Image 1: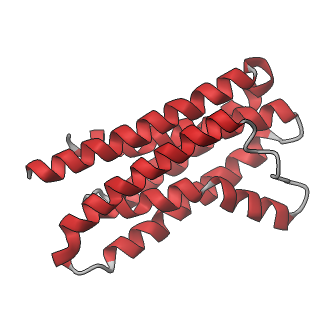
Image 2: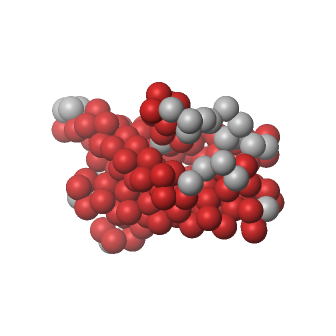
Amino acid sequence: MNGAAHIAGFALPLALDTLAVAIALGLRGDVAPLRFALLCAAFEGAMPAIGAGLALVLPPAFTAGAVYAGSAILIVVGIHAFREASEGDETEGLTFASARGMALAGFAISTDELAIGFPLAANGLPILVTLAVIAAQSFLVAFLGVALGRRLGRGAARSAGTAAGVAFVGLGIVLAIERFRA
């Protein structure tokens, strides 16, 4: 894959995961689309930077292992996304009534992004460009997902969550195969 395809490969599963959460929040009807979109863009743009920073402190001798570890992380995140999609409403405990509640919600919805930062850096992607793409898609998808949530229904949230799981697992497998062939 080329650089743009790799970036899209990282952004797509995150977009689907954000869409699942946003639709579920839209069904609740108590979340403003713009407020949630700004929260998502901030947290989902920053969290991969933390994961990437952890990967960048590894010595170069560990790069191959880091790529395989990153692939395994993506597969685990994908399995987790499958589980969330099948278990029901993952937004049940999220509250947006206070600054503290919003910060906790932002952290809760961006744990996948923290995990994806490690393989992002280990694969040598342009980190700032990739983070900008992730933040931009997060804003757009979160806004649209909440705004359309009431119209789309719970089945759409589950479908998006399942698709996110497939995309995370697929990306993890592709990255491992690419590293193996290199």
